[in-house]
Image (cartoon, rainbow, N blue to C red; front, side):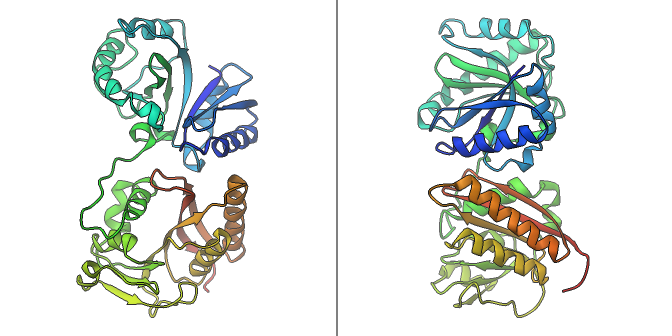
Length: 363
């Protein structure tokens, strides 16, 4: 197998392609990305047979910013007959000796309006394909969360890619997208950005300790309160920093203190803040530096923030801002874990999460 498929947001194919090219070069897997603008996916062509499996094993999926999912492609099928799509699918796998037996099946599409029209078909198609794949031994008889995932991605009717991913190094979500419902009482749709970030960056089994009731959080650029809402619903207390007005529903909880001051000048009154969140519309380099200052001073233990992307050079800007932030923390002897992702609910921005692991020297 010589191809890897990566899902991304429509319009960000070039960023996804640049990133997978860099990551592949770093582990000396050589090839090139195939990009079709606004398709919602990138295909990376390896020069050597077997390198597709190397890529999906050795590239840390969590380190990919613009890719929502990645899997090795076993076959590409075009012009599948409407009367029998399953037989050609099974036949395409018969000639592949190294195709693993899988524990789950996902029949998906890229995240574009054109492709998403196929989702109803994909849902109906899943049951008969699952039965057929189990009958031929390509799927275990019962779902197995630790075994590879069988992916069938339809880019248009009758045209699909078939492949597999490793569950420990891929997205656990269908199409790489967490399915979230907008809370009716939330003050803005931006609330879904922070909720998605929690799902992507914080393991669910750690929510009780890392997103615990009674914690203090700070929300820079809070109004009208979409991100504050996510902290309040988890029974945290929040310093909401913004010159605008906060939603009355949040202020009435008694869990929010509203400070009408500049987010770049606010200092927490007590050093008891666990979470710093920030969705300010500002230059990304300035926001990244501010987040670093908070962590270096010990004002927060974890932060989630957005970096707004420029119209051009988006990938280069992201790399530069994150590298500068890493160096800033390292120079100040802060031990940390950093993750960044272009989330489903992001638009022209990426979301970054940093957890302070320990400070080598006090500040």
